[in-house]
Every structure is written in structure tokens, then in C-alpha cells.
Amino acid sequence: MISNKCNYALRALLELAKREGAGPATIVDIAAAQEIPSRFLEAILRQLKQAGLTESVRGKKGGYVLARPAREVPVGEVIRLIEGPLFDTAGTNGVDQRSAKPDVFRDLWQEAAAALDAVYDAVTLADLAEKERVLALQYVPDYSI
Image (cartoon, rainbow, N blue to C red; front, side, top):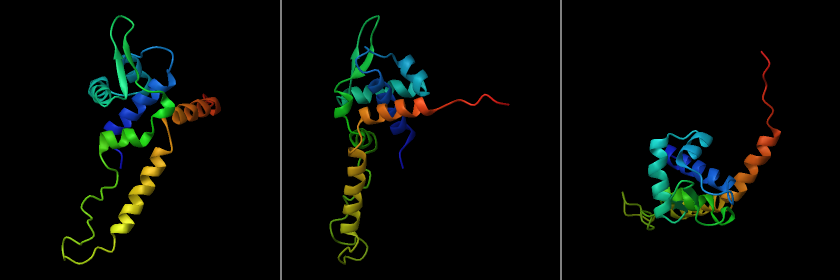
């Protein structure tokens, strides 16, 4: 399960990907566009900056930008940064810890972890930005009562 913090981090990066090449986005702009509480967003952007995913620009027209092109940032990288391993197989050394017998599930857990990583790593921020653009074109608000 993805935490709210991770969801907010992905949404903030999505917003920066959508604005790629248009200059920095302020915390207020990102928070409003993606409906993220500003107080959480500040801490998240600080963590993303420390990890090298974003850069901050100082000054009157300052804010945040992606540190790398959106097409080079896989979703899995962001999820692992915020959440850690999605499917932790660290304790599966081939032995069932409760009985000291060989662990028959070890390979299954490792295959599942690899499959999950492959799914998330196959999608970049640029892919998500394009998908959102296409979905927005298809969306027609219904104002009927």
C-alpha cells in the first residue's frame, strides 16, 4: 500500500513534470494544483531535493523544478525513496525463521518483488504527465442538475 506521503510526493513531481521547461513552481502552486496540504508538501519537497529529484530556485520567481528530465525519473525510484522496498525480502535468507526449515516461499517473494519493481520502473513522470493530459482532454464536466 502506498502512503499519503508517497502519493503526495508523486503528485508534486507530476506537477513539476507537467510544468517542465516553464520555470519553477512554488509550493503554493504545486499544493493548489495537486490538492496537497502545504505543510506536508514543504517537508516532502525537502526530502526530494536531498535525494536529487528536485532543485530549488531562489528569488522572486523561485520555486522547484525537476533535477532531471521527467522521462528519466521512474515512478519506482520515487516510491522506493519514500516507502523503502515495496516488497521486503530482506528477511528471506532461504530459511524459515520460526522453524529453521528451508523457506519454500523465498523464491516466490523475490519474484513478486521483482515484478512489482518492474511495473513501477516501467512508468516515468513524463508518462504520467502525458496520461493526465490525455485524460483531461477526455473529461467533460456534467453541470446538469
